[in-house]
Image (cartoon, rainbow, N blue to C red; front, side, top):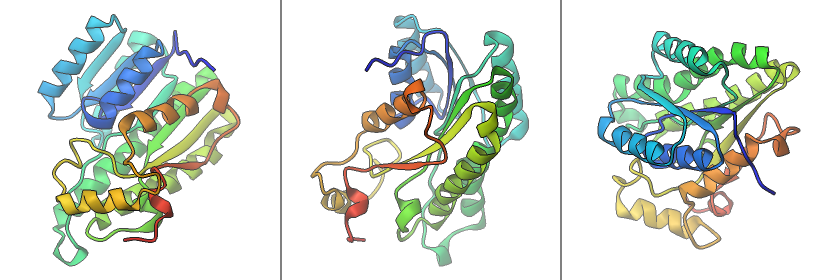
Length: 253
């Protein structure tokens, strides 16, 4: 089974590092035109842009705060003007600001919800009219296994990621008649810049939870995203698929 995206435009939010960069590279290797945004990450963005140019990948990027609806719409309008279409949106942009609920600041709650959930809504809302005109499209949310099971100290993050699951099912219902599918991926713990600052004992616990004996890697998630964005997944919508090396099967918390 070979999946190719030649002539297709794939938009990846939060594309400059971590899982986002792996998603960019995976779809680029499959022949896609890559559009992506970052926010306050110019060094990583410059390195990825250099990689894309070196591999002669058609691309365009900009610095966009996905929690700013006006900035998102301007980005989408520019992409539509440049390329004439958007075939795939991967809502990957996300942040963390951890604390137990009784110690969480107001701004920490709001900002994580704004970026991780509201930002995904803004991006999806902006691309759906384009996908409707095309008569097809794929929207993929990056959620988390913790949205399905809960976890201490990250109530803002879990609320946002659980919200993405509800948003996935709502949008899948609303857009199906236009040939658009909407699905969510729920990764387990991955070694990315976001998780690099976690205490070692947290990572060790995740390792113990993973019944396959290893932690999920960004390439595992990117492989599923590639499939869900392809015609092979044309009959799949409204689903939440875990990619967690069996971490969610463990009762350890």
